[in-house]
Image (cartoon, rainbow, N blue to C red):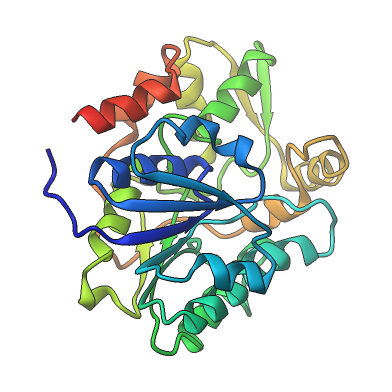
Length: 316
């Protein structure tokens, strides 16, 4: 059993997502009192079985609601984020990545919440980011660190995150299964340093009471760099598929992005393409230890029920 942490009151935004679900399970294991602010309570049903977890439905964009529900909190964690917007002009990204953090910061200041942890993204830059996603992530991050006041902020900037329930390896596994002979891949030369969700959760846990982390922005990467082509080929190998990965020329990749932009669910968008123009790798930072080879075959090679993962974490 991990060392118990102080009985903090912790409020989490985005707690029902991939990283959030793993973090909530870990905090529950450590006997923290956790409140999840959600727009729709049914989205948090998979976490309702965990002890000391309170699920509260509210309008997270309503300043009065935020001021009410952050009253008495010791720590606020913001994990909200989207990879695609409904529209095409960046307003959807700004609403989630800039407007919401601004409102969370204001509610933290109103309630004198002393600690705020924020999920940003590697290469987030309000000025030079090549995509709406990266510019909005950078803008929201900058706002929190510039106007934090008495609320100590720490931001985390990960490369692509993998683990049970991820939207990276699992997504490509699904796509490969419906393209059994060949798979046309855009931006195959784009590079990533995949980081394990458990290592990301560890970084958040360590920062909760680490005064030296206040005001810091941490780039988070796994131990190895890969091209997107290598990662998709590895996915095919682990799932036992003999699919040929065909790298698309850049002009074809751009055409593909413009076409898929308007398909249901936006499987690939122009903004995704623009984000891939910058490699998602770390240059001057400590690498996280867990390699994809230690984890990915476990959940891609056989069915894994997410609740079994959470229950096992609590029993550990």
